[in-house]
Image (cartoon, rainbow, N blue to C red; front, side, top):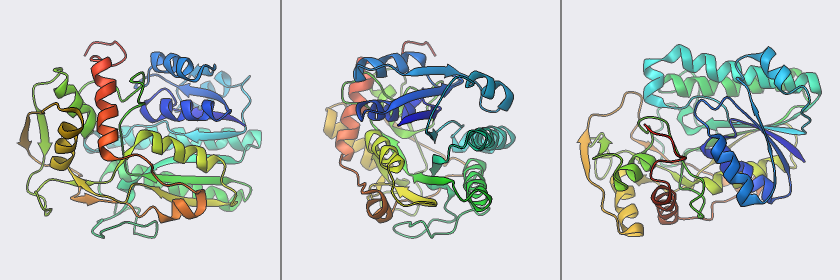
Length: 339
């Protein structure tokens, strides 16, 4: 199988590309490199001992994308491209709707023109509205009640795919709602390398640990949780990558929505403690105000993934912390850029 990965030069994309290459698939990555890294792609090829093709294109420009991919053949698409920071989406909602919706529309139109019907779409657990249930399954309320523009853009994308599947019954789409990917490849060669100030916990934490930043801000210590900090379902990025590979091989036809998570919730303070226990590195943190759009708890019921895809996570929180630190310690400034 030859797979087109949009946004494949980013954090999840590089790990997914590596898993696919090692599974014997051919990979083409299309990325505008606004947040991804060509160096990351080079390292993926070194780790896999196989080549892939990188096409630089902006998916919000449908005409330019069609031209850039005019000589590229593929059998399936993993659509990861998009913008994803909850807080930033509160400040720049128009950008989030344009980037996330336009890029998906470009992909769907390209697939329809070429008669390519297999799609794996990167959605998010943030689509769940008022997520008070201990474990969230796929039937939990989503959509306009989602808590921030990023989440609503993902919910809209899901609806576009479902509506498209009605008029295009051949569409074989897996919508993956994953929770909080963390960690890195255990080699330390590829990992999470956000540009500017990290929006997610683990890269911020590791940058403090390696000395790039002075202190970790813990956003919200007054949530209705045992220690007052937000609880999330953290999942090793290689388990997420394995989930994409499993989705490509799904035998059930049609469009399906599937959670990817561990089913275990950990608070921010528990993650900090797990990191120090796994690495021996203490991390200084200070309390900060809640971020707009954040919720107290998001934890997955991923039983559907095991039933339909034969997928379940195999790596622990401490493994993810250790691998994240291995990446950051080996690459104090990420893929080599300066802030």
